[in-house]
Every structure is written in structure tokens, then in C-alpha cells.
Length: 459
Image 1 (tube, rainbow, N blue to C red):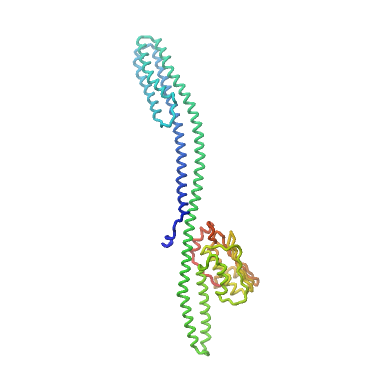
Image 2 (image 1 turned 180 degrees about the vertical axis):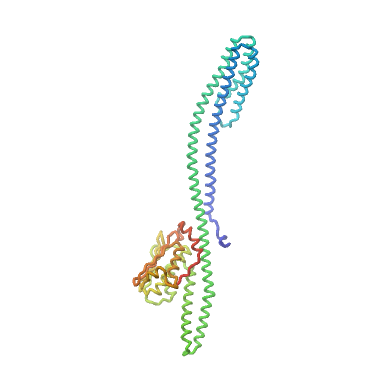
């Protein structure tokens, strides 16, 4: 792409807005996903915290039972010395377990709910247990083992019962939290299953539209470049080659006029003058074809109506241009190619068909642009329709032009029955008013317009 094209490639507000929406959608979609994952993580943490509370209390209860059972066994032996020796490490082990349980609970985040009876139970163990053990040790030293057994039953058993109640309460809380977690996780799963495909679909759609808009802009720049190139070629042909031939023709006229009337070379020079004039006419017509951009987009009918005058066609053929529908502006290059195809068909009809009536129908509809050039002349041989006439490229050039712009060209003719040349171009390709273009055209038009332009000749 040239630097001039880059200067013209200005991102308009719609394209910028589309790009901003695409970025916002990507960021927003990812943000929603992260938020859902955050909700799932919070719910998992809550469930994990409640489960850890239950596990901690179960371990504490098991330690209390083990501690109580060992003290009962020692009390049965009525060995005060053994009780005094073994009760210290047992108490230490139980207090360590209590502290670990407290550490687990205090490590939870502030938003994690802790059972109200949990910490009081731990405090009761920390406060009550040492004094009770000291009293039990004193009773054992005195030999009052009956009082020791009553103390163990009346003081340690309630702690076990309290932990059992706490476990039941926590178990109910875990069940409720689990049901709530399952419901919330199902909701998160449904939202994720909706957000992911919805975000992907909308993102791909907007990205596709953005890509299409950029591609369309590049194509339009390519079309403008091609129009400028055609205009430059036409100007150079007119200013150099055509003007040179005209100058040579003028000099030849002067030379012929200086020859005697009875000169034997005068007829040959006159024939050369005639051929030169025909070359000049054909050159002018070719330049007009290159400079079809001078035609207004809605003046296709007027441009085709002037073709007989441009050719100095003097026959008494009845020639008409009929417009059906409301004329719409055409894309510049599409207009040029449609004009070139229609003009070629009309020139062929004027020069070769010997028709009494020639008619061009221009049909503007929502779905297509249709051009029909028909005559009641001598017609075209079937073999010529298929392969063209040797040395001439009119029909093949028309077909290639039609293919390049995504149109369809149909030629119907029989010898002695006239000719119909029909061109159909889809509306989304032909008309500037259409905001969208067919994906087939978008995919292939750049390649087609990049190909070498075929200069049509007579059929």
C-alpha cells in the first residue's frame, strides 16, 4: 500500500467505537469470569473452614476421652505416685491440642463464621482442667480414691459432653453450608457456562466485524488507487500516443494534399489516412473507457446513451435506454466495469449486428443491478459465443470483467435471431448505499482487481 493510502487510512469514529467495544467486552468478560471464580473460591473457603472446625473439635473430643480413660485406669490402680507422674504429660498434651484447635480457628478470615460455642469450650478446658487436675492429684495423695473417681466423673465428663454437643451443632452447620455451597456452585457453573460462550460469540462477532471493516477500508483504498491509475494511464495515452498519432495524421494530410491529383501513390496514402483516422477513433474510445470515472455514479444511462454519438454512428437504428427502478449510486470501480461491459456489448451491436432496434435495460432493484443489451440483428454463431472470434477478445474480456466484480454475464444469441447480453451484479457489491458486502466478494475482489486489466476488443 502506498504512503498516500496510509494517509487516507483514517480510523473513523465507528471503527474506533467498535474497537473500544471489543476491548471492553474482552476485559468485561474476563472480569466476569474472574468474579465467578472468586465467588467459587470464597464458597470453597467457607466450606473448608467449617470442615476444619469439625475436624478440630473431633480431635479435641478424642483427646479428652483418651485423657479421661487413662486417668480412670490410673485411679483403678490407686497408685498416687503413678498418677502424679503421668498426669503432667497428659495435661500438657491436652493443652497443646487445645491450643492447636484455637490456632486453627483464629487463622480463619474475618468473614468466616465460627460457632459461638467453640471458643467458650476451649476456654473452659484451659481454665477448668488445670484446677481440676490439681484437686484430683491432692485427693490421690490423701488416698481418697472414691473422691478422685467422683471428681473425674463430675468434672471431666461435662467437658466431653460439651464437645459432643458442639460437634452436633457444627455437623448441622456443615450440612447447611454444604447445601448452600452446592446451590451457589451450581449457580456459578451456570453463569460460567453462559458467560464463556456468550463472550466468545460476541467477541468473535465484533472482531469479525472489525476485521471486515478494516478489510473493506483497504479494499476501498485499493479501488481508489486503481481508479487513479486508470485515470493516469488515460491521461498519458491521450497526451503522448494519441496526440502523436493525431500529429502524424495532420502531417500526412498535408503531404497528401501536396500530391498531384493524378499521382499513382495518392490512393495508397488516402487509404493510410483512412486507417489512421480509424486508429484515432479507436484510441479515443479506449481512452474514454479508461476514463469512465468521469461518469457520475448515477449517470450510467446517460453515458451509454452518448455512445452512438461518440462512434459517429449514422445508421437509422432505433436505439433506446430504459431505466427500471430508482437509480442508485454505484461503487466507482464497479461502475467503470459495468460501463465497460455494457459499452462493449453496445458497440458490438452497433457495428456488427445490422439490427433495426437496439435497447438497453438498466434495472435497479434492492438485490441487484441488471443490465440487458439486446438487438434484433444477425446474431452470433454458437461457436463464437463459446470461444470468441480468432484475434478478438470482446466476449472473453466482458466475461473476465464480470467475474472480477462478482457479477454474472449471460450471452444469448442465435444466427438471424438477435442477441441478448445480460449482466447481473449483486446489490451489496454494486451499490454504495449498502453498508455490508458479501463475504465471497470481500474474499476475492482484492485478488481480482489486482490482476491485469483486460482491454476488450471487438468480438
